[in-house]
Structures are given as structure tokens and as C-alpha cells.
Length: 171
Image 1: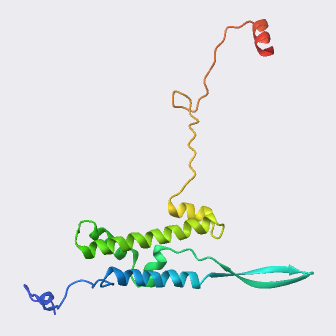
Image 2 (image 1 turned 60 degrees about the horizontal axis):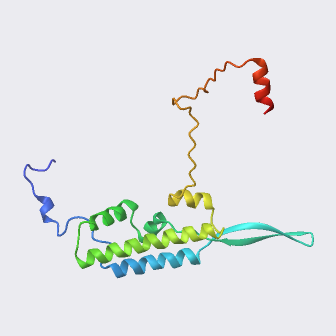
Image 3 (image 1 turned 90 degrees about the vertical axis):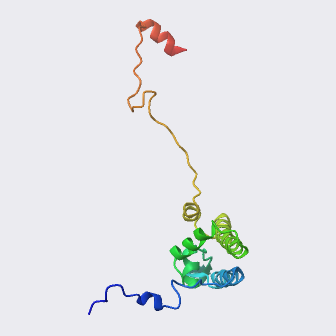
């Protein structure tokens, strides 16, 4: 049975849209700190072989877990799009609550970026992966084109005699 034309069932709802995940910037920061602690207390485990006096033993080695916004969002039970849209919506607002949320989000992003950078700098994380993730690149731009923009080598025309060429090459 289709809805009747002009129905207004949607107005019966007590509220529209999703509630904020956090009622205050302080609660968002506390939740982020819980994630930071979780990431530190739950390292990745790698099983490595060790040799001692001819015996090979397998042992677990703790590896640093790189913090990510993706993992934070999963921990907070939201998706990245929600977090990104929330951050974007705060840009035009000037009230104290919005400023607080903006500051906390910037601090969260700074902690995650710093943790990854320091982990890579100390050799605890793969520096190549982290550099790409952080947008850091060792760029070397070489222009191998000739002056006319093509890859065609320049043609040098000379009118030297064989003796003049021999003398030039000897120099």
C-alpha cells in the first residue's frame, strides 16, 4: 500500500539526523586518549627466530603499532567521512564549543602524525610507508628533455678539418 499524497510522517520524529558522538570536546579528547593508550598497549606481534649456541628458538617480538585516523574512527565507532564532515562543519562556526572541538581534532591529528613520524625516524616503523602516508616525499625532478622540449639529442654541426679535430681532442 503506497503512502498517501501529502503525508507528513517524517514530522512525527522527535529528532532528525544522528546525534553527535561526543557531547563535548573534553569527551572526544578522552576517547582519543583511550585509543592512544590502546595503540601503545597493543603492539603488533611478530614471531622471529633467534639462534643461541646452535639452538634456534622462536620468540614473539613486539612491534610499534602506527596510529591512524582510520583506526581511531573504528575505535570511536564512526567512519572517516563522519569525522571529516564534522571537522569541515566546524570551520564556519565561532562559538566556544565549536572552537573546542576544532582544537581537539587538530590535536588528535597532530598526535597521530607525530607518533608515525617519530616511529619512522627511530626505525620502529617502515619509513617509506610512513613518508608516503604523511605526504613526505624526497622529490628529485630531472628534466631530461632537450631545449626544444623533445627527447631528440641536439645535432652539432662542425666544419673542422681532420687535423683540427685531432688537435681539439688532444686538448
